[in-house]
Amino acid sequence: MSNIAATFASLKAANKTGLVTFITAGDPAPGLTVPLMHAMVAGGADILELGVPFSDPMAEGPVIQRACERALKFNIGLKDVFEFVRQFRETNTTTPVVLMGYANPIERIGIAGFIAAASDAGADGAIVVDYPPEECEEFAAAMRAADLDLIFLLAPTSTPERIAQVARVGGGFSYYVSLKGVTGAGTIDTDDVARKVAAIREHVKLPIGVGFGIRDGQTARAVAKVADAVVIGSRIIQELENTPQEGACAAVQAFVAGIRQALDQP
Image 1 (spheres, rainbow, N blue to C red):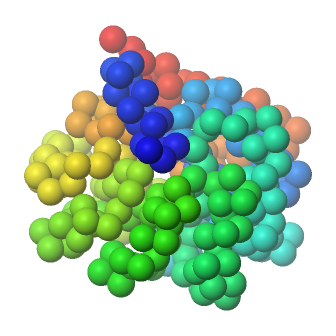
Image 2: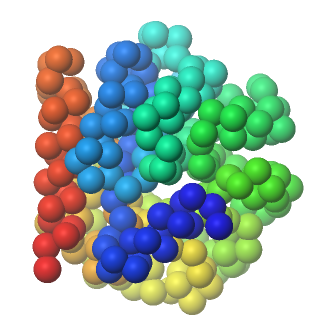
């Protein structure tokens, strides 16, 4: 059982909804990445997504695009991301870390090199936005062989065929993108999310995390009624943008703690 699968099993046993939080590696400064990871865990995050900065993050809205631009000014690349995970693992050996990004940086070092480096650093999985599941069977199998999960996105427009393919090759959890469009855009229609998640569950036996558009405790609680986890990214980046760097960790921990409290309310 992978670390991500074990985490979801523990959450289910405790009758809790998972909280998955995202930051971009290197934003707002490289020296804050690992402390921010620890701050999110201290606030109650169950799984961390660490974004790999990329110059053309096609699925991201303006908030995460700005985060990528700031990180790239520090020349943060995939090797730096592995180092951040390695440093995080010096004091936290249990919280799953998922690397989220795009195919180009992986292609540059090769799939085998990526898997070896990710495993050595202590990562638990990856989301590669522009790797479609129908083209990833070998990659997914190689990830599984290294006890890593390859996690796929599903959208409101995903066909039954795409959902079935994700069910066949995906690992860890399935990430349902609740909105048509980019990260941080729009407002979630929770009734529509409930219908779509129910349809996905007919095919996918993995836990389902829902993201894109969850901005506060009220929305998180509404989504938690139908999802196994809620995913929050853009709202955390905004917290960083609106806080001086010396207060960044405290602000993020407090925000995450507020979401955790909302999710845990009876």
